[in-house]
Each structure stands twice: as C-alpha cells, then as structure tokens.
Length: 159
Image (cartoon, rainbow, N blue to C red; front, top):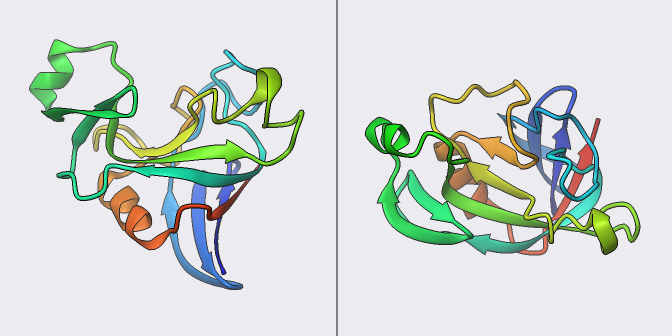
C-alpha cells in the first residue's frame, strides 16, 4: 500500500510502498508553524488522505487560482505583475483530514482550509517553513509525486 509521511521538523515528504521508502523530497511547510485552526496559516498535523488530484497533464509551472488552471505559466515577469499571489503551480494534491475535531469538520477542517501539497516557484526555498499552511514542493517533484500517488492515499503529517 502506498502512503506519504511529512516531517515538519525535517521539512521532508517521504513516499512509501508498503514499508519501503520509494523517494523523499524536500518541502516547505507553514511559516506560522503547525496547527489546525481555520485562519491560522499553519500546517495541520495528523492523519489525512488525498481527496483530489488536480492538474493532470498540464504543463509544468501552470498557475492555479481557486483550484482552477488560469492558463498562465509562471515566470519571473508574471511574478512581478502579481507580487502578492501565493503561487500554486503545476499540480495540486488536496488533503482531507481523517480525525474529527483535530483536522476534520468544524473550524479545524483541512479540506475546508484548502490545505494542499502543491508546486511553488523554483526561487522559493525548500527545507524552510515559508508557506501559508500548505506543503510546497519543487514543480518537478510534485509532478513525480502526483503521477505516483493514488487518490485516497494516506498522508501522515507529524512534527
């Protein structure tokens, strides 16, 4: 069975097939730390699963707003035109919490908070918490992960 493990302290995402690690990627979690509260800008902890996969077959660096591809391809000039955008690029793996009261339902619902694993501009550092709550990855890495992981795949986010 395939599953993912995200380590906040190590800023890594590890992918496993059964108990065998298949690959590991450097990631960037929330600048505000960990937490599940709506509006906190924090990365939620606990058991999740991939509820939806968005962006199959789109070009690398495709831009998403509201989970919809805009038709734009990220570039430094586009970034200059929109300096305040939180860039969501290439692919989206939308997470849903599995623990009621921790990361599911009410004011702690990861899916309602739009918590994703997604691509980010290559100029953004990995291994350093910088996101608004999501798990950011290099675009080539998130595409590789997207192609490997099935919808419904378990994801555990731990400190």
